[in-house]
Length: 115
Length: 113
Image (tube, rainbow over all chains, first blue to last red; front, side):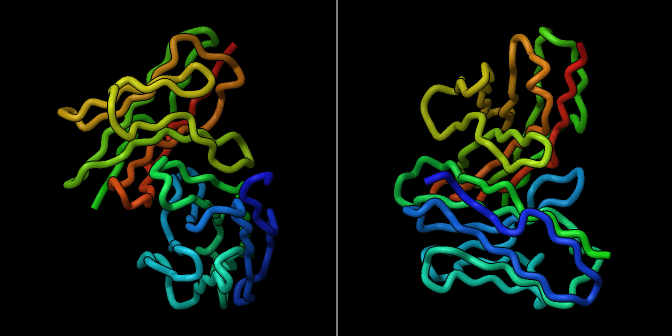
């Protein structure tokens, strides 16, 4: 396995459009996280899944944001009616809950630009 | 809740000089501590972590960090930096057993020849 992959790497959209990002975690990892990183800031937690169950959502995740992990494998993050403030890097990470190693493995991110 | 403060947003150093990137955290519960590095247009890569045991931890690329519980700090050090160390460095904490990282705002390390 080559690690966590995210698609697309870059997305430019107009305000008001919907966008969807996909994350494929490391295959044996049962936890999957989404983070958002704006320019000059550290990543901020958005949500995470254990298998297909969404266990926690940050208050940053407004009702325009929805995340799914339908079969406990890949995950999608959808943003509806995008706003310029949504411009950011969206990072996905995965982890094998039970190993207690503490290390989250990150993908290279999906950069969103809202015009 | 946990929080992380990275005390320097930018650190310029000359090549082959030593460097220290400072990190302080706040938490009401025991935590795990991490340093991640982010090269331009890339994701985050783990440099090192403290889970338990020896308070001095060694990581990749010659970096090390020391956990100081009384000062709630986890400073990152390297005795001699290289141009290739130019990157953004993030300190992060996670409540023990929770595996949800809270990141600091990052420190941009710039190496001058």
